[in-house]
Image (cartoon, rainbow, N blue to C red; front, side, top):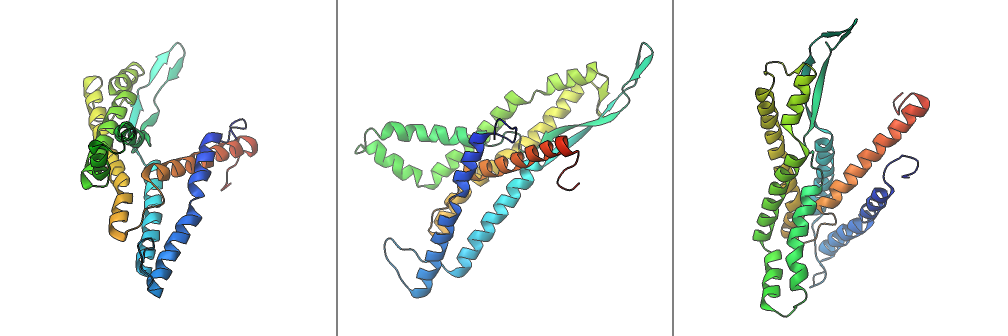
Length: 262
């Protein structure tokens, strides 16, 4: 897969591992509904009304659709390049745009947040009977753990955006090539405008990832069953699926000069 340019083979393996959990999820929901209908109760057997299973399935499908929408969404800033004459040729004069993705950080803030919160658990696991380990296990199942996780995800989203997006460099390149955003002056005003737009997109992306990371816990608290997919798993599966489709589309266009719809 990697050699033929259809994407990353390791990502496909991760994608297959995530999707392979769908049958077990369906089996779990079915057992919960049948146990509720037959009236079976017990410590290791949970009951779930049929409308609860429907809500879980519809909710998960809605989450996947929303993630696909956010992954493909972007804010396009129009840029107009002035005409200039170099020798006997004229350059510039065209209109283009700067594509700014809504969720430019991807799954990285989630990975950073979960990794930091898993580090104390790894250290405390060496002392299973200690009081600090018992306290941490209780802390992980509480609401404050989710609040700390959400704060870390928001912080890492801003941090990752700050090191991957530099509005000053973009403003300088636009000024050197004669590009201008309509209604915005070149130089400092352009960089400030790009910073404001990036800040708004980063805020939405941070809140989106924070809410997405807490949804599995909310499902567990409301319905009493563990969600089969985590936030990072859903993002990885959706991102790999979208990227694979794009790679296959690019290969078909290069080979046959037409795409799926051509």
